[in-house]
Length: 83
Image (cartoon, rainbow, N blue to C red; front, side):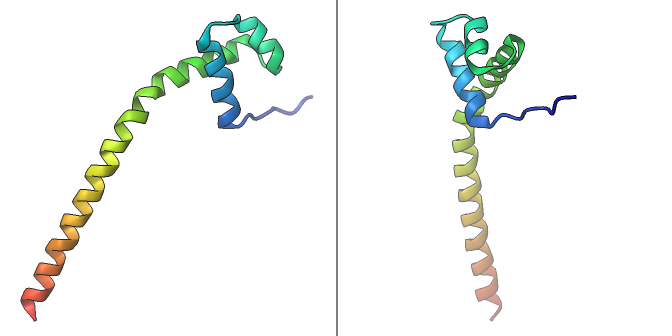
């Protein structure tokens, strides 16, 4: 029995981007990278579904940083007011 192969996220992204480009068929891409064409389709679908998160994460991180800064400021005010 053969062992399952695992692929790095970088490899999956590379294959999916190649499929999105549309220059070659899924079968050609799959053959070149020694994976099944259905796998290429799945990775492409995952890439397209997750693409919007790339643009929302920055806003979430910025809002979180601002929230933490405000929290630290309030904490300092509270601590200094008691002493």
